[in-house]
Image: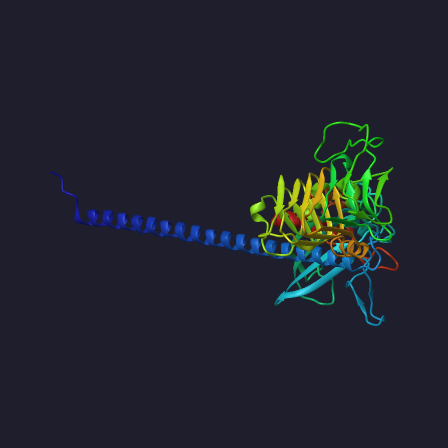
Length: 468
């Protein structure tokens, strides 16, 4: 047998060892490379989430400040969104740091990282064409006509553009070098103001007079200027817009059941030639909008707070809502019941405001309601020993308009749909600046105003998609 020389065997073992070491080093390199890559990916993801999260919070803060601005205006409803800055006034007016835009705030987060939000006002006369084009895409808008309101200022769409940016030089704008934008978020919502207009000045407004029964022990008080019970002329004004729908058309007669002396006022009973009692007619908004504006929404009677006074707008979306001695009706504001309402015997209930019920109403003594009741179906009041007191009070209605009729969020805060905005801005950049549209142009465009060009505004929006 041929023997392998010792030197050759030694060389082969050395080669195998080198190859083994090579593969070990290669494997370790792969592991380290993968680990570094995964670490970098996690860091980028973390940074992206942090940037997006901060920008989202800033945008929400901007929307809240805009709502507060609308509520604080002395003239209501607000028909012009125009925040002011006047350092010469006493005290100074500091509603913004840039009145040409609208509401603008900047604040330091940590180190060189800053936050900024902008709520753009409508200004068709903006002398800077490029800024006007951007404004048209993100400005606030009065939607009253679109929502079918007869008065301007009833519903506004608010948009807030927020930025997270790295500030390296205080002497230049936040989005110009050496400063840089880290992230952009744009949120929008709608705010609506209630225009509370009951069918008439009456303690009780009855949509179905033939189902009204004012029994003994009732005190329905209209006072010197209002009526006790105002009711629909169901003969000449059939109910065709009920919520929920009711059977039948025009009635052949009207017959209220009223105990002697139970109703008083400038006139005890008045038939209205024009009677408007739909939610849209009474509150100026649709039912779903009123629901979204509610301070408390109840879809299950089990969730109704017990032993607590109701405040603000309470929207009860239940088939039947009942109050009794263990759970009396107490509080003030607007109680909207999309169903039946029963205030049982011995509840000793007291409510100050507007009670609007789409279904049947039954109130048994003792109970007192100051303001007005609007019922679209059956209304029954009765008492034995104690009284059911329903008293019209204009001052209470004024307080309801002031307290709950102010601007409230009527559509959920959501991310603005910016696909069309970004594409349209990019299109304008392509037309204005051939070639590389990502370049920031810092030239002036107006003899009286130094500002950015369209590419600069588009550059802001382009960052929005990065952290979507």
